[in-house]
Amino acid sequence: MHIEQLHWHGHGWEPASFGHLPEAQLVLLFGSPTTLRAPTPLHQLRAAYPRAFLLGCSTAGEIMGTSVFDEGLVATAIHFEHTALQGRRLALQEGMSSFQAGEFLARQLDPEGLVHILVLSEGVDVNGSALVAGLQQHLPAQVGITGGLAGDGDRFQETLLLWNGQVEPHSILVLGFYGTRLRVGSGSFGGWEAFGPYRQVTRSSGNRLYELGGRSALSLYQAYLGEQAPELPAAGLLFPLSVLTSASEKPVVRTLLAIHEDDQSVTFAGDVPEGSYAQVMRTTIPQLVAGAMKAAKTSAEPLGACSPELAVLISCVGRKLVMQQHVEEEVQGVRQVLGERAILTGFYSYGEIAPFTPGTLCRLHNQTMTITTFAEK
Image 1 (tube, rainbow, N blue to C red):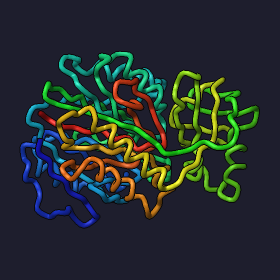
Image 2: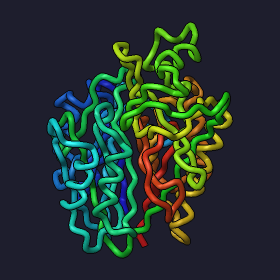
Image 3: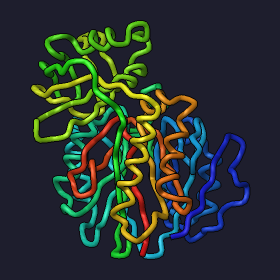
Image 4: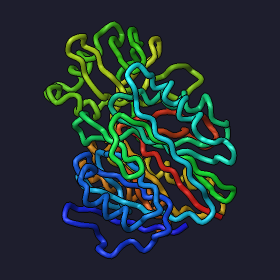
């Protein structure tokens, strides 16, 4: 595997000399919605990597090495020596559920030799839990799934996908990796702690929460936020929900995406099932950094003797808002664990897709650092 990485800062690419991998099959591109729409950087990437599939999404921040950028682009060109790729895109249609979208995309990929899929999805109008369930319904059990929901800073208005160099709204992309010599690992950890009482979800529908413990979800959030309540929905990222669906399962974290004044409800990135129990969460910067390092360690373990060559980091926008100027500390923690050889790329998201640990079922997460590591034998 050979990799070349560059950063668009508004006036050009750095380093200025690039395109040394004309045989690259894939360019992963992450950036702000505004910058993704700019024609110049995309045209230059197409010219530099003529054989590559350009795939990516809009973000709430871009990761390159141990740096985190805003309102720019991070491009990672990859030449796989022993791996084949197959991608599919679905334009979301009115009336199509997120579960149906996952089913459709899973059926479009050739299962023969499929090792792993990377999922990038519209970030605001998709139920990530249902999307993952639909994908798993029609994929071989041994195929790993990781990815994330596209971002739009802290605006929560419009997210974009990049499919073969074309900017596409309201879409979901999957990229399949094929090859017996490819090793893939993943890890997903948060670093948040629950506080306050557990409250039963007394009224919900899918990922829309109406009542928690008989109280309207929006009024409860406004009470927790106090003076910050007018800053919803962005301020809600500081207080995600821990949702426990059964005593035998780990709780999942759910991030607030939208509020609805008319019926006092709140929309989350994934399901909040009626009858489950939810608890508000909070964190500190050291806890978030420790969670990122734990995710890195877990992601490297399935690679065995192979050291990671590429690591795709997808971290939640809520973590970025908590850490603010310290945000690079979690990426530096990942570097410390994975070592200098691994090329780090990725983005801040509206939701992360991965198993809790290797060998378990894939889930939608919020407020985690999710890492996918790749190496070729």
